[in-house]
Amino acid sequence: QVQLVESGGGLVQPGGSLRLSCQASGNTVTIINIGWYRQAPGKQREEVAMIRGSSSPTYEDSVKGRFAISRDTDGDILYLQMNSVKPEDTGVYYCYARSRLYGYWGQGTQVTVSS
Image (cartoon, rainbow, N blue to C red):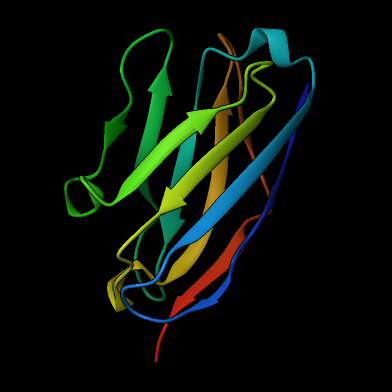
């Protein structure tokens, strides 16, 4: 089992920055892929950024060049650096991790971009 706890959400003005964190615990050595999803009001959950194995991170088109995903050296903390945020970035951001057999979700953290 893997547990994921997000933090760092909040209210930010357009053009501002925010950094989300995801603390992973439990059997973290089984994690193969880890990343971030978001769900805007009235919309489906979508993948924002993902680290798959040892491959380079991938990003949803609308956040390329603005968001950056990274992990700490121990691999148990995942970050999402959000720069030049836009109102359309508003939503609940979820941390997601996948082992060979299971997928795990955090509880989500709200990000609101508004002036």
